[in-house]
Length: 164
Image: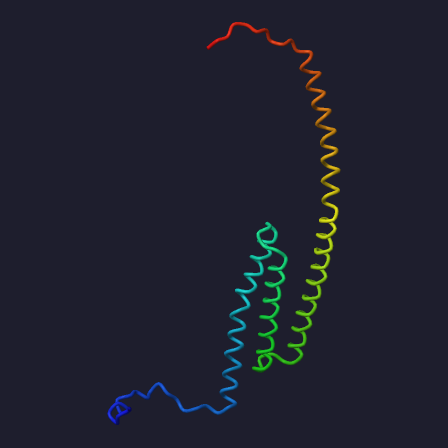
């Protein structure tokens, strides 16, 4: 139960009266814009790290695609927030959206090509391995024959005194 003295002792200086809806909405949009801008750098860095890890075999294609999608979403969300905040025009927003759409299409085409090439390599790998091993076997047999012939021309050591 609240007593009069506990209410009187409470510090109300931190409270402000409610803001009009248009100011509250503007503030919310500004927060979303700043949050979006703050996410672009880390997500772009994460994408670069994922691509590097993919290059060394430490990350799979799925991880690269997820990371790329995250970066695109951050750019798109930031452009939308900036447009709503009135920081960029509708034309600028459309230009940004076009660039992002083009980038997504290029990534998708590249991904399809990589996927196709990987599938082709996986299909061809067993035959390529068999061909290599067959050729290597022939070469090894020739080397064995060479060394057998070379060794046959060298006098075998006699069983001389053993040294302990």
